[in-house]
Image 1 (tube, rainbow, N blue to C red):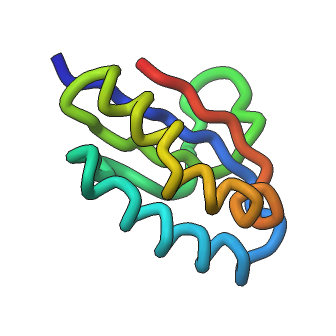
Image 2: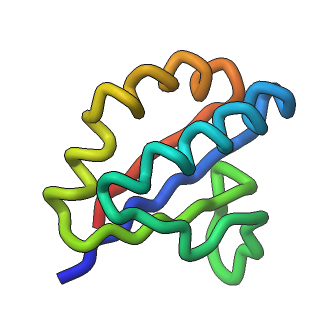
Length: 91
């Protein structure tokens, strides 16, 4: 069964987030991950603590975890943390 990584984010440095986004997309390839959606959130009910959301699909939860914990992805986490505030969720 496919699994999703849902990212809630608030940009803090647009230059850094653009650099991070390009690098992050490359790290998905070995784990068969792909972006399903990315963009501003339209709140239909309740509150959204972050104005932007990304949804990434993986073939299974193990692939998603392996991607997140991979050396390639972990190498860009400091860049991510300077470019945005975020929460990552695995479904």
